[in-house]
Length: 318
Ligand code: PYC
Image (cartoon, rainbow, N blue to C red; front, side, top):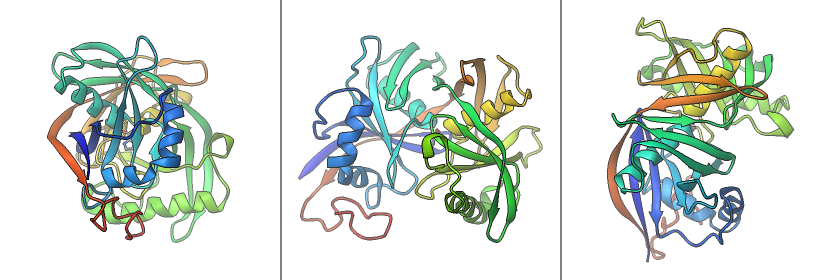
């Protein structure tokens, strides 16, 4: 029997499960090096932690690592039901709340190492968390793709710590009750991009599809629907997606440095964003709120046919 200590939280509705003890030794090194070993030798632990029967398609896992940089508070590797995330905004906010609940962080500024770079975070006195995300930029504007059943869809390709295709075109209002249609639509866009060979930089898969449209509540802000790899939609406004969107707005001259951007998600919860100019794009700061939902121990019993999780194909992952 293997056991893992975890702390669960949600950030604006999107769950994060931080693994704080019990994970096999990944041999040291920075999060990028440890991610390679995680992926190669321990991928079944990923599915055991976040997939059913212990988790769900929606859960983002965060493996807590000791820091390797002198000024970092911790390292982290984010993962989900199908693989690994370079960076995760909502997950970082959940991680900071978790480190606070563990007594490892107090209010103030801190640094966290991720596989795509070190990010700054700030825990505010009121419990909100700001993330100084990795530099974000628009790679290409106005990219058109033919999407079966939906015709030609035009959008921007942008990096916010993950690769995004961002479009303003939506077949239905961005309301939770339309999540099935929105999931099918954004999945079709992702498949069409792959079929057309449209990628992020260096041939990277565009694995997050974001639809932005005026919020249906009449608040005047933009709402989004973000489909993540693994076909779960982000319940939060998506920190990396908000960063990518702000990079596009900045490139279009529609959002100035230091101006506040309110991004609503599909549940109606909001992240607050602003940016400073970077070298290639923008340096985004995303602020949101997380809440602890559980402190638990996961049990992995080798005699259990689903010990290592029910994979995305519906079969035992190992
Ligand atoms: O908040 O960046 C984010 C995120 C990515 C995937 C799910 N949430």
